[in-house]
Amino acid sequence: MSYVEKQQHGSEAHYYFVKKISFMKSQLLIKEHIGKQKIPAAKYLLDHHERLVEREFALRKEFLEQLDISYSDLPERVERKAIKIENLIDAKNIAQEVHIEFAKEFIFNSNTIEGSRIPPERVKEIIDTGDTQHANKNEIREVHNSIRAYNYLLDGFRFNLASIKRLYYILTDGLVREGGGAYPRGFKTEPIVVGNEKTTPPEHVQKELEALLTWYKQNRKTLHPLQLAFTFHQRYEAIHPFSDANGRTGRLLMNKILRSGKYPPIIVYKENKQAYFNAIKKAREGNEKKYMHFMLTQADKSYSWLLTVTDKY
Image 1 (spheres, rainbow, N blue to C red):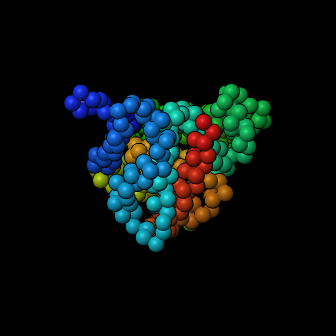
Image 2: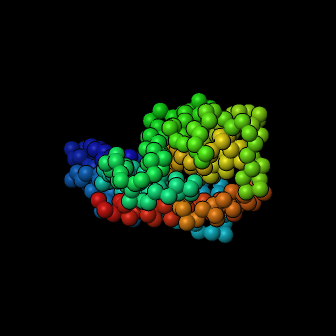
Image 3: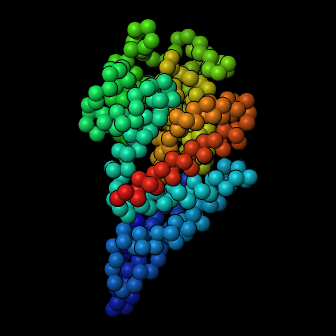
């Protein structure tokens, strides 16, 4: 968040634009002299937007070395776009508007990856009005559950087993599986194979998920937020703790980590579904660079779209 600070120099008042950035374990500061006339922080930020983005990028650039993708300019592109989005949301005071637009796009793509056929206009209709004429009641319920889950991540979620189970319950509440049965509660009880790869056996799920949560808490202030979020997501999907909804819960958790690390959330786009699955598989085989590269392409694509959203206001 940015603000204007007043300082007295003798008998004269001078004003400064200030932005303090808490990033990983560092406190970054941008401070610029405005002059003797006070200008609102939002106006100064918009009037000098590109230059201020570059100033902040210069402060954050050194942290990108953690991502270890030296052959690509993707990290720098993503970083600049993330800063731009944050600044524009701040200057235009449009956090709620962007939140709603993102939810529509994210829920549509995330549910479609998992097999939902409800079209985007119907998803938007449900989020905007709470109602729709779409015929498949199960898919309508899926969207309503996704909205509840999305909001739970913003308010009430904690990185512990109980909250993750709660997230799964919200996403699957009242849904009917193929064959007519309800979704089982709690962690999976049968082995699950994904893309010819075994996931964590049911009897080891709780222990491995607890270990992942411990890893997250130990690294959340020292590991780059993009690395932290993407690595957590890949490891979570390898555990595959539930009988279903692992992709949906995993992508929500990934975005919770990004938000906590001062990054906008991202969308894994439905048209990139197979590349997404392949990238996760490659990471499990030891090729984490390929996986990271894919996730950064999705971040780049998501942030480009988010910038078009901020342009509307």
